[in-house]
Image (tube, rainbow, N blue to C red; front, side, top):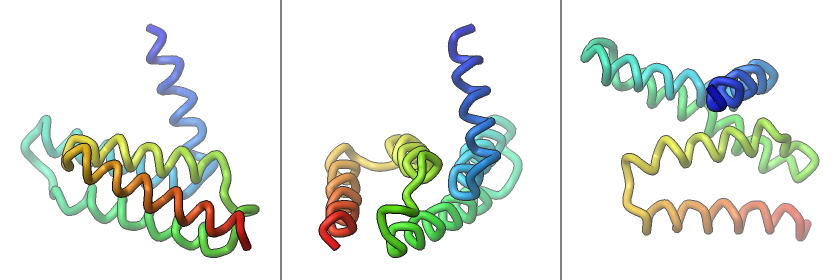
Length: 107
């Protein structure tokens, strides 16, 4: 029952942020594909790529453009990827993201 409240707040947040919304669609598309063995696995990839492009644009624009939705989108992408990659690759991605954010703070 507790997770239902958390899920509802995630869904609400995703409606306010296009990057986060695309990640939620990616999760949904992947779940439908796995559970029903129907659908196109590329669909989930397209949503993740769109979310990544939005996040990258925000990072290039500077720290003022990094919102809670941006952080939520990045965290959700990482949660999605954790099932697909090793811990070492995840750590590398986190370090790369951290260095990008630190560069923004330095400017």
